[in-house]
Length: 281
Image (tube, rainbow, N blue to C red; front, side, top):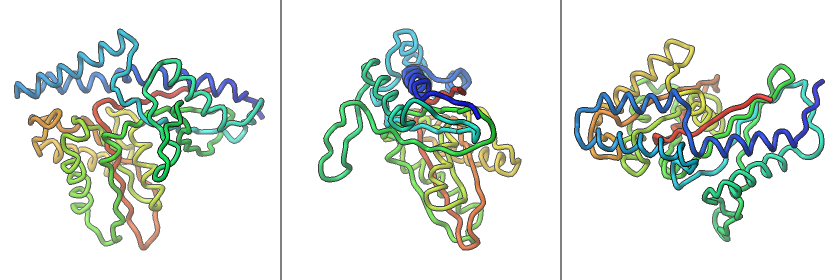
């Protein structure tokens, strides 16, 4: 049994959100650079270069990539041999989020009630905490600040189990098309397939943290990722909706067993600023 203080977790959460709001992972930034080099349409190329300049300035000046610094989402992979000490884990995580957003002067976007009140909580809490138990005695924390320009364009559909592959591909592509310029393309797209209504949505968001230059380990799903990406880029929506080859930069699929009577599919849209960072304690 390994003891981990929740104060350590708090510090890591603050560190992760402070960093991922101002810089992308290197591989994902390189995808954007590569896409800019491959654009021949002048408006599209100009927009891509502007996005790159924005990423560079944000990192150099230690300021947000986007004015929407998102709602704080955390994935926790908790080793079953870990015991948390010195307080409440959920409280510590929210304190870490609060410190990151207030000390870094990030925009505070969370309201306390979704319908009746909608008063700003003034510290960007509470966070969305998604956890699972794994082997071992360590804790992996992944932070993903999720902006709502793209989140609002995400979709979920409960297919009949008789649905064919083309129907699923069409659903994902149409979700991207309907998002259009409102979700700030070029997109990164997470797709969750299987599980239950809620779990496929979880998978679609988790897929965004996998790394945009990776493929699913299952070759059939890897091929499906490439097929969907190709079809989305053939729409010609392009960067910020002004046309071009680059409507999406990556499609990541995560899947899970499901019920014999169902086939849930969720699509979590994300703009080019696919902000996420992880650390293992």
